[in-house]
Amino acid sequence: MPFGSGRVHADPKTASQLRAALGSLQNSSDEVIADLDELEAQVGPVSATFTSTAAAGQPVYVSAADTVDLADASAAATAGVVGLVYTAASAGNGGDYITSGRITQDDWTTATGAANLTAGMVYYLSETTGRITSTAPTAVGALVVRVGRALNTTTLEVSIEPGILL
Image (tube, rainbow, N blue to C red; front, side, top):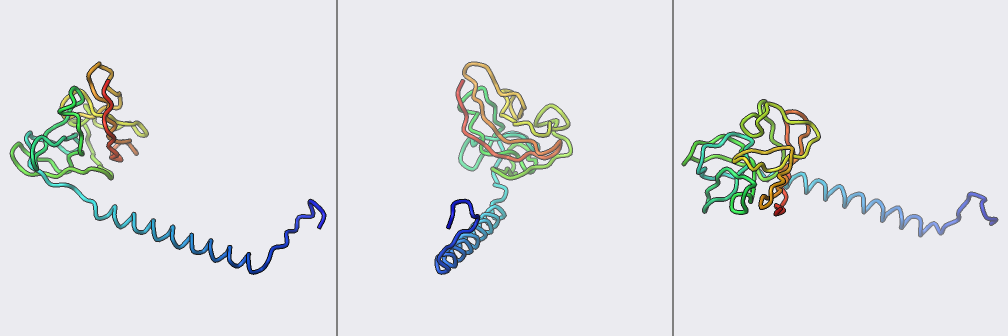
């Protein structure tokens, strides 16, 4: 066959094997996606005792066994964010926090200092206890801890990353 004729002749058996392999890959990828969706649905809020009074959206770190406290980026001891408060809790009582997923708030003032998030912005642990900010810390000795990205003015996609010491 002349070059550029636009026709390719393949063994029909090889073509059917390729179709079967592609179909198998599609089925496998669909199964993996379904498994991930199911796993994500199973991962819910984590319950703990709160050392301090905490409002939804505030970042927390593990301060003792089964106990969390409000996090801040000023020192390694308090910058190990494990999640954001999901349900408000008073000091000494139980509450919930999430480690990943989405958290929606009508008012983010307690967690950010502003009523609304800035859509598309990445949020970091602040050097102010119990706050997140769209401006990464810059002070020597502080830790830069990414906690998520604002999907819109009320919803944060929580995705906590390990801190980087400045």
